[in-house]
Length: 602
Image (cartoon, rainbow, N blue to C red):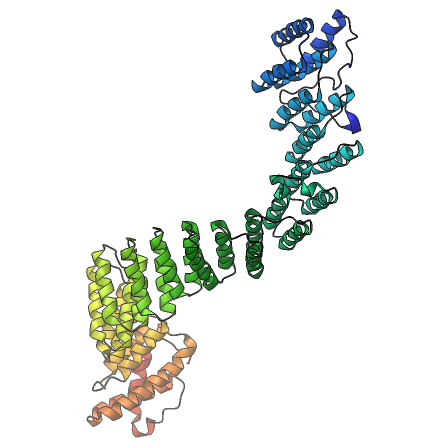
């Protein structure tokens, strides 16, 4: 089973026979034939393959080839993926006394390693040792690599100790192999331990590319594990032994800082690069910009973008798009346009969604000029504005109280065959109401229906508010009725505003036939607890309207009766009752009670 208690598992067309071969050709032909057949059966070879190998070995025993010729023969088997046959061949060669050296065993181990059959690599190592052939550094490196790729880190580490006990000094490749395995696991503690061993035994100063590879590999693994402090610990180990990091090492360290949201440390690494005369490349800047984006520092990212352009490092499309989104999210409107210019120079086309987000950012910054500049940039970059983009620009116009500009964008939107959402018309109608342009609000509402855009409850509420703000309560009342016909119930605020507008309408104090039906229809829209205060406000509005309008005694008496009835319904004492006769006051109350829903009072 090999030295050190290693098991010898088979599987996958591997060798599952005895893990040891006789070291000397002491068998007679009958015994040799039996041993051949046992090895062939253990490797899963069929009868024909077994006979062919026996015939080949018989010829070789007569020809007595050299080690080099036998290696080439073995390589021929392995190049044809005949690995189990090659394994049996080595055993047969040993049986007949032909030379099998460590190179042939290493070739077989490499073949099993490529097949990810690490247990068979261990078995071959055991067979080599039991045959009296001492493994060399290549043998151990192959076996450690096989265990590392199988994530058998404990075995790989034990092999590292074993080879040193047997006087085989590990080299940089040995340590790098284990460190690579630790990085993939990831087992950063073991990786750092192996790195310290490499430094202690002097392998860190081996000449070649492997000098910085283990450090870079560990730093990359630290980044993936969000262990930026350990990444800097690896860098310190590297600098302590006098090794100069290369660009890849620095880039991996910046990436580790980015993944851990350590923006200041990322810029510290950039300064180290200049200190060691290792200027940043495009990958460095990309990693730094990514760190700025994750750290919500778009301005610093834009400074890096300018530096890249000065140093003729072309930014990647992915970096530009990511940076644009970061600037927009951060409300950096001017920086966003700077990125847009860079995108134009790099022939990178942002998406319509990016422009829409930029318009929204411009609106939040109260920058109507920036919203229109974004629309113009879309035309320059030949990006077709989507309906959401036009809607966002119209929203910016509404926020800036620029009705003419909003209507201009609406016309452009329609020319682009984009159908506006109801929200676009809602904002336009709301702007009309804000400026007291009730007539324009009605025209926009009519235009909306002409375009077959279905109004929603918000549309009707905005239209009612616009008419009321313009002092046109009759049109507001008409809009509320149309709202009800469309299946939308007015909210409490809309109902109250309409009722108060009708109650305070000048010149119309003959109100029982006007106000009471509206109360009957819309008072249920008001919360029960708010109905009493509303009725008191309506009574006050009626009183004020009556005083303003004047008129004959009969009309004033009629208004006074409604006022008293409203106050009584609201639970307040009727102060005008003494100036009215009992019959008139009773009639007003009966009419009111017949028209109004209960308001919680008997």
